[in-house]
Length: 153
Ligand SMILES: [Cu+2]
Image (tube, helix red, strand yellow):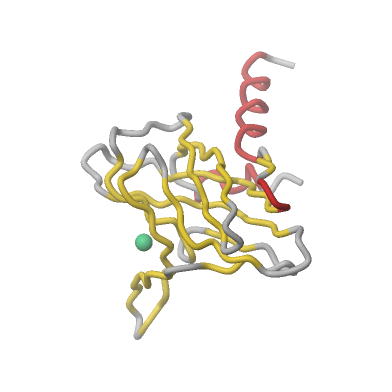
């Protein structure tokens, strides 16, 4: 196997790494879209899995890398897309909660410094049962061109 292939596999693994969070909540495929340095907002995506026997809400998120984080849902209304702020989001214990482009996303306001592809930042999530957990998000370029990479299994 060539060195280049090895690097490719290492990158792939880093993208699909599962972080075990506290209280039976897992986050997978956590990433943030790289943005131009002048950009004041960025979007983050991840899949949350709830292994508890009941639903749980995420009631807040924060990060040392951003001034403020909100949950937004992109919806199509009369042919126009708009983002609706969700104060909380629910992780069902039956279905994963998917933050993804064109849908529910983490809206990340005012990055404290420019973030480049390959870098990681942590985001802390607060749950409705008064617990919290931290997940590592990797900065990536756009998803569409390389979405085949994590549809690998
Ligand atoms: Cu948004």
